[in-house]
Length: 97
Image (cartoon, rainbow, N blue to C red):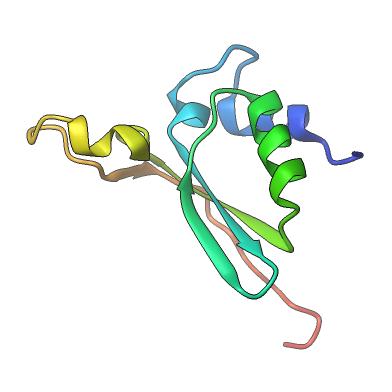
């Protein structure tokens, strides 16, 4: 696959070793039939690549960095809620707009 997973990882993580900027980041996938999977988090670029190759989504979106990983959100103490902390400014301009 030619997609630059490592470059995306480095851009979102801002370092070469994984930290919360990437590991707590939401990735949403749209699959065939308009099936939408949200709150996916990955430990590294290889994990993201593996999931993208397995699911073969028609598109995916990069969401905000949350206070914890979604699968851990139910186990997080009430004082540290599962909330978005950071996100990038994005302009989505379609050719038909």
